[in-house]
Length: 192
Image 1 (cartoon, rainbow, N blue to C red):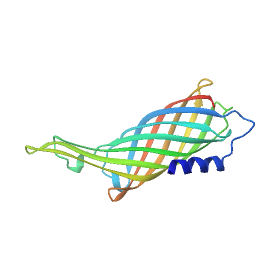
Image 2: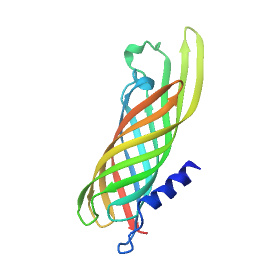
Image 3: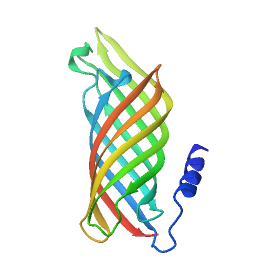
Image 4: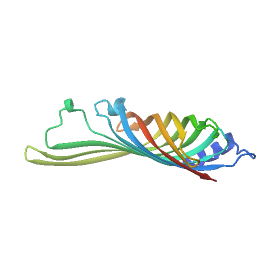
């Protein structure tokens, strides 16, 4: 329901230009996520993956639907016993808008805004003092993101992308969770 409302809102806010060809892009990227905030303040930098599709509504605006995954482990000084593995995984989907420089420029910048749902999963497994430990807990939360990026057209249909974004899940296990993925990837663009 939220995704439908966001898509409809974006279509009303950013009308499709009648004079330009709409383009569809498939975007994939990966990099590192910087943990921060209450939910991840004792975590190490971890891997981050993002993939999605976007539809240009005009030369300077697109609607974006994407999924993301980030994983974090606790800092060494947290005191997790040897032989025990603890991980926090953040998986989510968001819909939003990307405001961008026109396509005719080979290099361009963009601003990304999105709303979505993030699932936080905490897992602990291993053995401590002869006792096997295996626990998992998950919780869903509404989330939002604000990001900036650069895109460089290598060919007419392939572009390199680098971006960073601030992600904020409103309530995971009683506290908010924030993280900043910094990713590099590819965008494959086709006529819509």
